Length: 446
Image (cartoon, rainbow, N blue to C red; front, side):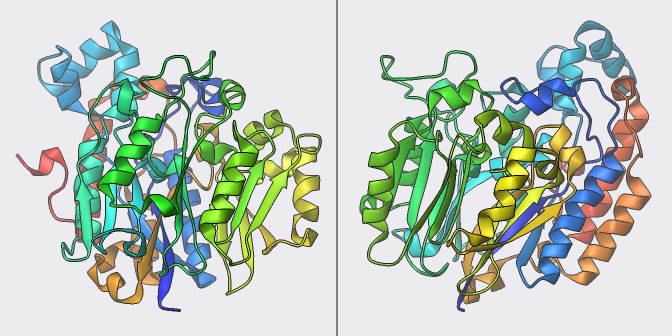
């Protein structure tokens, strides 16, 4: 092959905690206030990435953000030295302290939308960092994400980095969690599929009523323009508002695609038949597999609880795929029964691989949330920071780094402890040296 799909997994940050910040995300809100285990969380995610790399799949790592975000707290009117400031925030607005301490950047499916060079007008790999402005704690991420991505994908002759879309609800963008790509080979022109939850300017269009739709059509269309995508190879479709109200906050909680396979729930799309027809027509004459999971076998509620569709669909050879699911799928009878028969249904999906990412799951993100997919041609890999590509050496270095710097537990009350903030900075300063990232964090730029 002359093209590969890399999965760049987000390293879980040292401040990983359960604050229940993400309304519309059932797992996030239901586990609010519990004691978290940052060390276990980071090791679970790293183990998943390394195990897949040992199977021959291409894996990379993306560094976490620095937390708490002291600059954001200062902009919100808090002052004093760090000890005084943390004390003030914890007493006056603990919800802001939790938000500014969030390790949510670990879910790199929301880091950006990526278009491979085979799809773009200028022949470069395009990145647009997501603005994530639907949730305050995530709206703090785009600038830092952009800096990190530029340090990883650093050859400007190969990679094009765009500034995140303007703030405000009209161009609300949640990144690759609402985007997938279909292709015959990773280095060949594909069909880019954008799924949105609502229209920003057309108020009479269908929309959820219980929870916010986090992705607008206008945002998706803007990214397609920025990336120079061919309209004849681009599909826009609306997610079913009813499933958003059932807890499907991103489309990757109800569907996933890879190469010539779209694995999705029966209730995923608002205009299903028209959308599937458009995908098929734009994909062309090559075989395509629509793997539709019936609602009478797996309810939307089952999908949300188990994160069946927040799975990684990975090509293990030229013809076959494996689906990587969280351990929680085994605990749901309907989901597990379906997965047991999935390899025999005639699609390229031939294996089911189960991973323990429970710490991430309890905070609202499964295997697919933890990775950003980047399709690269053989020659483009040379433009990637080599210390961001997962090797056995890097795995051992990061694993030792986690053991050295991460706490076993974080209680909500620990967020007011200035020692935790210092621990995070010390850890990340060392990480930038391990991953050859240079000075990317605010405390390194003073």
